[in-house]
Structures are given as C-alpha cells and as structure tokens.
Length: 112
Image (cartoon, rainbow, N blue to C red; front, side, top):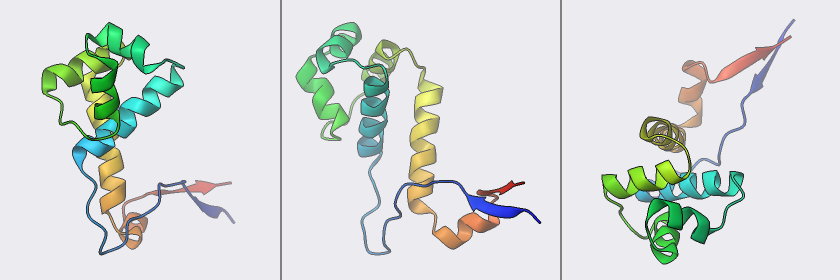
C-alpha cells in the first residue's frame, strides 16, 4: 500500500497572526532569487537601475515598489513578472489557507 507524504510547507500563521503583506512576500521572493544567483545587492541594483538602498528596502518589505520597479528588478534577476507574481501568490495562498483545507485540495502526493 502506498504511503501519503506531505510536501514541505512554510510555517503556518496562527489564527490571530496578521496576514502577510504582498510587499513582504515580494521582497522575500526577490531576495531568494538574488541569493540563488549569488549576487550582491549592488550587482542586482545596478542592472535594475535602482540604488542598493532601495533594493534592500524592497527586499525587506519596507517599500511598496511600483510595477515599473518590480519589472526592472525582476528583469535584472532574469525572471519575468508572471513567474514572480505567481510565486508570491502561491506563498500568500499557502500562508492563508488552514492546514486541514489543504488536504482537500490535493496538496499531498502518493509515494510508491
């Protein structure tokens, strides 16, 4: 018989925790992608045409960047807006959906 193995998930927020903000999740995603490329803030910021300080504030969720700034930064990271926004939306969805509801949406896989 097959065993059900859950996919790893980020930690769930508790019922009284505030919902994560888009800008915080976007910043986390941008930082993760920059680190995957093993780039410094300055390298990515230079290609995006923004200051390293601004990029740092975006990554820390302190700035609400315009769509033009998001496009410039994502281009500097060699990704596109649809991939970036989809990844952020997926993380927001995982943070917002209670764990029991995920079992009903196919969030588990079967291992043989």
